[in-house]
Length: 270
Image: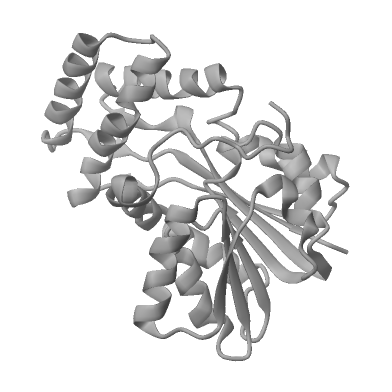
């Protein structure tokens, strides 16, 4: 696609997918917060949360930077930003603003940041290397670019479950069909090296799905079902059998359910 155009998100946005996105965010939030605090997040700095969605992380960031700091939450979905703006008004938060912008035009901003954070953004990009180059232009000297992404091929269970394995294969196949990489996590290090970042910090996190979080696997499958059908990867009957198998696994406590690996990478602008 022409990189001057906005990337097209694969799933419904806003309230239609809020439950799934909130649960996914909560699964990985502890790893992200720890990594951010280890890599430059502190009081008084200016932070950009790019691909902010409904803003759960953005609001947490406002607490970390304090009244002397500033958070700018950026997304290319007006519906997502509307949810966040309502939350900002309700909570009467003053050290945050929102911006409707596409990643490939992000370098047109005049502001520079001490820290830029992107989570669950790069798996949707057709040109992740170009996006990284654009983001680099917004960093202050000594600033940090922190990216957190999944390798969606690594959702798993023990013992192995055929339904989960098939659902994981379908999800990764959709990425191939769309010309994006739903397994981009481990490749981030190489992309940042290609942009001549030398000071890199990398961490891998992988949660166990417990309690209500086990239901995320069903929410994920239901969210993507129409996309699987759109690309003629399965039939509606196949999806019914697949989701029946997922439900049986989720409700069987003998299964250990393992989330996808998250790769967290921090690059310093020296």
